[in-house]
Image (cartoon, rainbow, N blue to C red; front, side, top):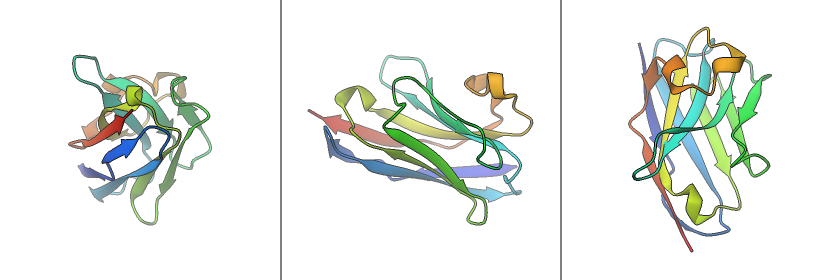
Length: 126
């Protein structure tokens, strides 16, 4: 089993930036696809970004494309999400997720991921 702990969420002004981190422990996650999802109050959990085991395949939701960057450091068992030009619509709880053998086409589906973190709150003020 892999345990995930997210950090880095905070209150930030519109136009600002932040970097979320997701630290993994337990068995190695080096061969797993890792992703970030988010959930705003009253809304369904939505895909933000995903990265495959070696970082060669990366996907972004249209809502964050061009202003976000997902990365991973397998030596540190950590996944990151850099977000820039934040706006109030980015306000949500951000979750890190992972799982093995996730098809690239299906990597935007929450159901594909076998383990999740508890989430970190990001609030963007206007």
